[in-house]
Amino acid sequence: MQSKALTVADYLESLPADRRKAVSAIRAVIKNRLPKGYAEMMQYGMIGYVVPLSRYPDGYLGKKDIPVPYAALASQKGYIAVYLMNVYADKDALTVLRRDFTRAGKKLSMGKSCIRFKRIDDVSLDAIGNAVARTSVDDHIAAYEKARGKKRVR
Image (cartoon, rainbow, N blue to C red):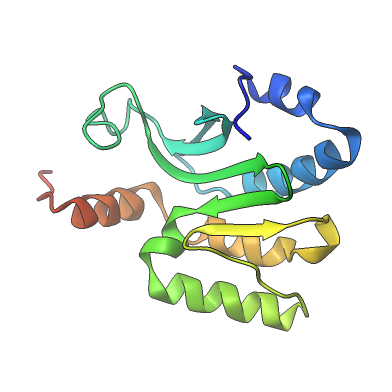
């Protein structure tokens, strides 16, 4: 369910109280652990954490008006989702995420980059924080360019 909210504050305000509380808790972890250089914004109807266009003006998929996504957070119809692009692109990051969930005694419900949960108690905040903290902007750009077959010019 894609939100039409233009700001993160509007997005949060639009959520039912229980979802707002859970999304706000995840958001706090992400903002606390997010490496320097990423920016928070609304992207694709979700709270997005992106490489700003000022840092990577080529944009996402060559679209110069869309920043490269790093992570996202959304209240979907039946669950809350955290999207972690670095975990999708890095097998070691995925292994660590799985290990962190297991150590926390939590069951990981995950698609390619999407962690899904219904209640905040179902998710490991530390595991998400560790995954978010794992990849610098430079490393994310390098992985993105490698996946796109681009040669980096410095």
